[in-house]
Amino acid sequence: MSEKSLEEEIKIKAQQNRRLARYMSSTQDLVEEQIRKARAKGDFDNLEGKGKPIDLYENPFEPAELRMAFKILKDN
Image (tube, rainbow, N blue to C red; front, side, top):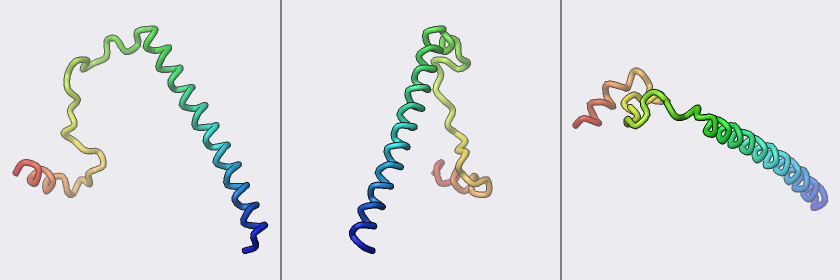
């Protein structure tokens, strides 16, 4: 690979990363703004389970066929 083509490839990757970073930043800003508005309206004030611990008993990423084995390991 020649030095010129390597430089061109680096420039292309940098442009792609800039676009992605700009997109991610604007998406994050949008989500944060929606959360701020919902909080201001009181949408989070009376949620079901408020003040109670979250039940993390079931792991959605745990394969169903291994649940019993993991439970036995966890309990002992």
